[in-house]
Length: 271
Image (cartoon, rainbow, N blue to C red; front, side, top):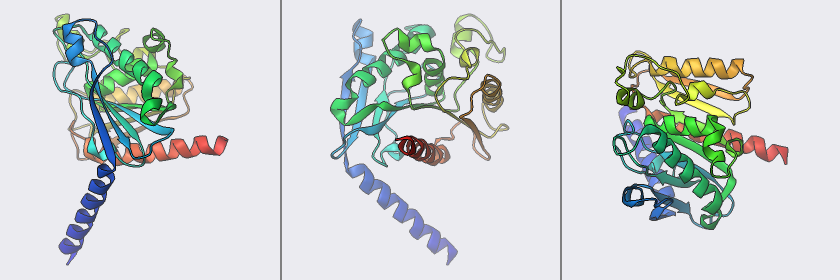
């Protein structure tokens, strides 16, 4: 009897998710930079817009892949609650270096800030999010204010920063390019941790189980959480998802959506 009940609940959730997604339209392969042939191919966005969107909150999602692989995506689980969802593609190492990849992330977000109203999104309600390498990128452009400032955007205008299992020390692909082993930790200007500051937007850090994650990823995020708190940041939260490794997105999505609901409610109360 219990198994039957669980099956029915699971089916209802699948049906409700499918219905929510069916109310979205997706525009694909929008160029946000075309400096050369490679950027013209890689630097593209997909935008999922709910029906009759007007001043909706926006999720800008960066894919994972170690900065060497992966492709733009719009997680189906995020196409709910009225969010406009943007999936970002970016150039990859070794064709470009890590610094250039971070710049792609900043360029993409600046494009969203300046254009998302045409798709029903509100540029003052942008949530930066991504998994793994994507989490690293949103942390870098959200904490190092110079990245978005280059494109005339204030990083503090972001609604929140939400890395899923993002690296916060200098990324292992950058260390690889310097001939440094991936188990040798480095913290320099290409580390989100280096830019920890108390006046950053709200931050939600989510990782897998510390015993199952890759290369101390939970501990890195715990250190960032502590340094942000010491810097005076009052709106940073850290979740460790017991029983999940680096592929921890499924249980993380509901936490993210609940976080968005809370942040939007707080802003509405201030009006």
